[in-house]
Image (cartoon, rainbow, N blue to C red):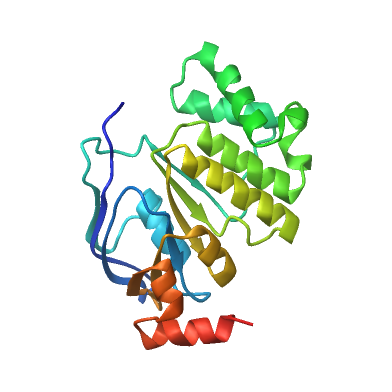
Length: 236
């Protein structure tokens, strides 16, 4: 078993652009185990925080560091709200990702076909990824990330653009990935989804980490007025 990267430690993490602070002095340690969902209203900074964690953005101030024995980015992956599909087949999309990750040529197609089978896309392996439905493309994006064997998988609103049936399929797949030992860190503004998928909630409001709670405590008795107002507004 290779060394672990976690925990991920954010210390006074701040990010701003054009004079506007988007992430405001966030300090938190994200460890292995619990499914962590970053929850908050639109514009709270959830996606920006996720990109900072993944290394796509550099903080304006503060720090972010993997503190485990394996310090680096090689064992994390990210899936976006609108996945980018290459002009290739579904199979080739995964194979290309494995090539970039340095997987041996003889292993790439075998691993790619295995993961397509696992996500229910084996029958479209040779179809162009760009003609697949939105739900199929999101499952393919998850398969492409899963094939890398990440220790941590960042998911940015992965079902936001999907119909209810496709969203359920993606949620089921997220459960499969987590059952295989991958740490899930995910953003959403959907309270029902957060309740179904989270073990702990990080509640973000206007770029500040307002609250961190076990999921049931968060919904039963939120500790901050911002979280209480958000729950009241979003629940039917």
